[in-house]
Image (cartoon, rainbow, N blue to C red; front, side, top):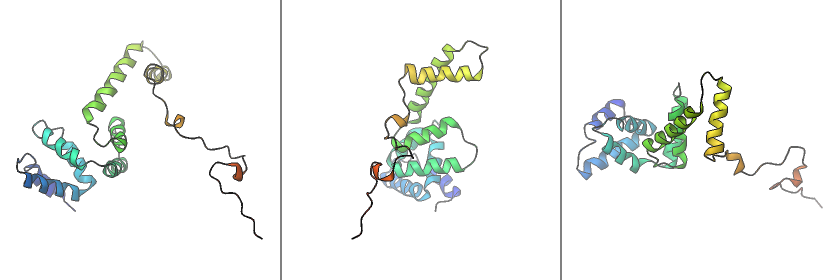
Length: 169
């Protein structure tokens, strides 16, 4: 496992143009697992290292790595909702750039703020947000695209995918 000290040493090599060095850095970050990906994402915020960090992240991001990063983030303590949503979205789209996600959230927030006339109760603000998301933007919950399970009062044999009872002779 790669330690924090080793990751800090790798930071000095991140912008090295040599393909051999780049492969070595990628191998060490990959060996660090989730900690390595989170470390790279922090470096991506630094202007001088952002292009190199983003390039390496694009090579290392996989669905499995994104799922593990998301779970590690949730277990780490206080959660920033925007960051958690970005990490969850990356499970479906590992190459999603943070700037695109942040820009979309900012656009939705700006539109919602346009509709708010203060003073307004929190419940009314939530209704306006729902209006923007579901009414204007057409967002839909996942339950609409997932099959609904039959109600529990249905006999087991009539449920989709349920095995029929076998008869013994």
